[in-house]
Image: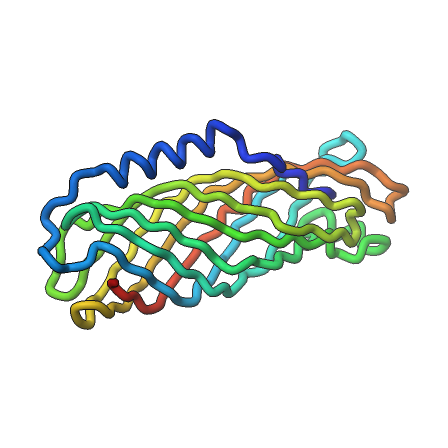
Length: 233
């Protein structure tokens, strides 16, 4: 099974992100106290839990009950944000690359042997842009909700049961909610949850099955639970 997600970012998707950012950055700023910085950076560890679903075909025939599994990951994740006013803000999050081992699940397990159960490995670096809305503050606590776009950049691939593994990058959607607690004028702590909706397609050959071609449509849909510290500057 070769993870063939589209290697080129669509011009439409890229244009949409830059258009959204330009609109946000031109948004009139109001309600932020004078001298209170509108820029901030946050850093912490995140737990990434994948909820996969796949439609797989082997030699052109649907493989009933075939599935893939990706183990949960822990990643160092940072983001930078800008407050337009007391209610609205935007954040850009970039995580360290994830090395994801793709394992066989469902009816694919019946093919081991001759398969080993490890289909291959892909390395993904996520970039997330989101707009956030904070309805109100409760003392030092500031809850928020938001939504945006995610770009999953596939940096490397390595095949095992699947030879010639080739994955490409994909755009997806994200919904987000969290809460920040200010410790002082500059420092804060936070907890955050991001649900990503991210699909990819795949194709390749399985050498132990005589080089049979395999195609797949895979939903990754990771949930990212993030906690750490923030700093205004």
